[in-house]
Length: 559
Image 1 (cartoon, rainbow, N blue to C red):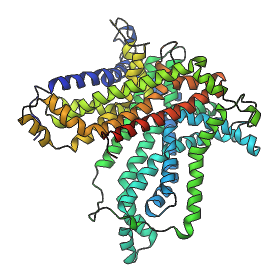
Image 2: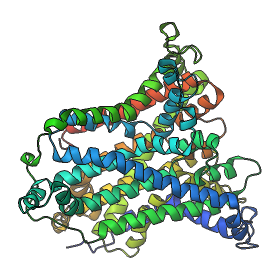
Image 3: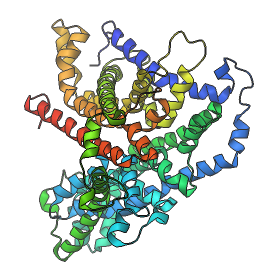
Image 4: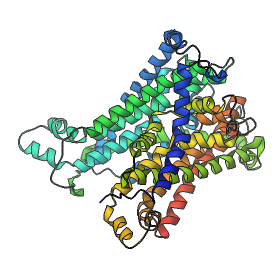
């Protein structure tokens, strides 16, 4: 039975509701109100919607919106072309060194997009590493819409690769084999059987890629400006960061980006909720996979080339730059130095302080989103409290709020005149932004875990006199902790290297590691910035893995 006694759960409901109101509802409401009332920042509700028409009629806005949608579609198409063949081969054939390729194709998740983009700039720009090694550069290609598409594809295509490989592997090859017994060709069996069974997972992953592409800031900011290819994210940043500041215009652009993100999210939900083809024969055996035969060498070559492009080139470029005495010195033994790493740990230009600030913000974000997420999940899944549907909606809304939109919302909400207190221009506004952006990670993981726990366990504890808080702490929380811990570690890694909200919201005189790297690159201290980038990638990868290992050895997380 579902828990009905709301007396003991009311504090959790109030805590979750209040936290979600502050973290999610306030910035989103501020954006909507500012878009409607352009004089809101002056404390006036005059001239409602007066700027909506002129802003929407601006040719630059139409161009930015069109570029945003086009870039999203291009990245989706490129990701599908790159990931689907690799994923299908990985699922249906015995690929040599398959676990190694999976690990290497995970590396783009460990490299923040803006850092990977900086690595590509160092490689392909004039006098970059490619020109030093082979005598030519690809700068015109890199600083173009096609170059932006390729760089963003390398960062996002693993979403499609893992979705396709796991989905097709679950389907297996035996159903297509049955079709071939009855006369179907290999291509027809794949098209009529394997592909329909795998379509929901493929479609959902492609929509996630679209949402990530239209929200990405680092790559369009680094490459798009020189290419003359402006998108909504960079347009919002310009209206907030350039004088004169145009907060109403930024709010309207933010709502447009939210609508695009929300449309992608709703399409994803629609695809996942549609009735799909299903199998009834259980999961396939490893014997379903076929040997590659004569295709072994081409397949290995394909995996090697892709892995080197998406993981090897950015990481080698980052490390080579970090070890360079001067950029002009190029790739030579006498130009190698560890002085940049020494400067990093010596707090040159505030590097160590920025790194420690980001790590602390990562820990704080993980703890807060973990606590709020699990409380919200408990209210949604295990109670019948009135308003739990609203709590569920507020845990989903951040999925449609890009980081730049959250930043604009927090500026509008907490920079109003007459507020008795405000976190604006303090470290707490960054914490609010990170929590809003990353809250869905812990909330969705905790919700999924609680849905797998039967109500009878908590009911039995209640029969023996346990209060709802005690039953939650002693029974439910230990059962959902493995999923919650994994989500919190992911939140820590993502929050520790966040860029876009940090650039817009960081208080004067305070740096995060993301803003530090970005500004070092803009100021010409590229080697120091890349040293910080390399250390950040290592720390945000190793620390969560080490903590997860400790949890597994302690028995808190299953192997």
